[in-house]
Amino acid sequence: MKFRNRKPKEVEADLVLNDGVQLSRKEKFLRAFKEQSGWLFVAPAVILMLIFTAYPIVSAFINAFKQDLRMTSLGVTGQPMYNGWGFDNFVRVLKGDTGTGGANFLQCLINTLVFTFVSVPLSTLLALLISVALNSIKAVQKAYQTILFLPYLTNSLAMGAVFATFFKIVGTQSSPDTVGIVNLVLGWFGISPIDWMGLQSPAWQLGSLSIPWAKYIVVIVYEIWSGLPFKILILFSALQSVNKQYYDAARIDGASRNTILWKITAPMISPQISYLLVTGIMGGMKQYSAIIGLFDDTMGHDYDVGTIVGYIYQYLDSSYTGYAFAASLILFAIIMVITAINLRVSNKRVSY
Image (cartoon, rainbow, N blue to C red; front, side, top):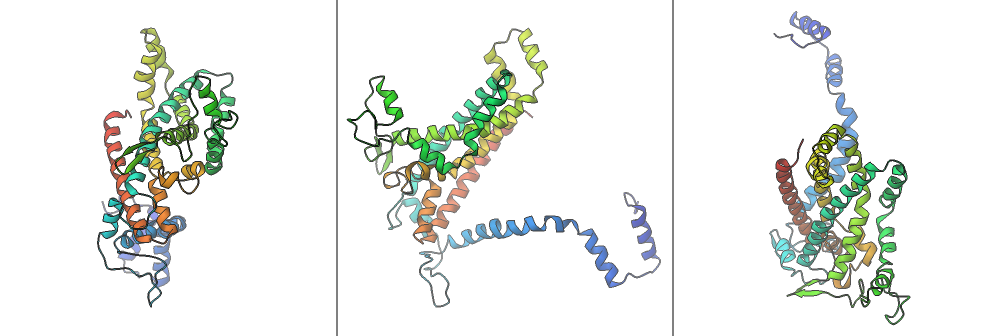
């Protein structure tokens, strides 16, 4: 029983040792080194993760509880000064009472949730429909795949800046050539030009919060469009592995195309759909570069379309790092809760 699942050389070595032969320190070191040699292959990745992932997380967690922490205020030891420990940073961030002006956390949170939970499901649904259509078009399938995947290869800042030209009013509203392509199309239906992205952009007021619905539409359309290529690639690849016999049997039973889509196709690729929803929500909660590309670093008028990551960067730029660390931990907790709920639901709805 002692030598079960052991190699003959290992058994022989153990027998020699049991006969009283002692290994030298060098031999012991070499044997231990060989047993742990696998760690040498993963050591570079582990070291990089410790430096660039583990350390920032631990540092952010500690510094979030340092009240009034600012990188520009250095003590006699050369370390940033702070005013004791506590939850003051979290309270001020959640209340929007940091006393420094700029973005409001609750406004940024609502913006981020709206952008994420509208764009991610819609883009996933559109990607599913386009993937199913591509799967049935054999002649020009490769060409369409290439065209649809091109936005994924483009820098998000450049893509956002170009995309904004469709909505921006670059002149006076009295000149039909300067109101943007979208407003020109709306004008064909008798709709007056809308200031989609400027200071006069229409918005709803909910107390101290602003709901700039026109800017929301611009961001959501952009998010759907930019998120389609990757989702189409994943879902189209998943469709290739679906057994065609299920479709043949459904057609024999007289099932319609809608029934086949929602009763056969969707359940068969539900793991990929769940993956796209989870990763899409996590990515949407961390959205920042697209907003900068569309609205510059001010993220709209007085940060009215700012996101939580934009809120964090604002305080990092102004050296109010205590508020930035607190906001980052709140964002981390929100993403963890949303992901846990999503995974809980997918365990009941996803077919493996």
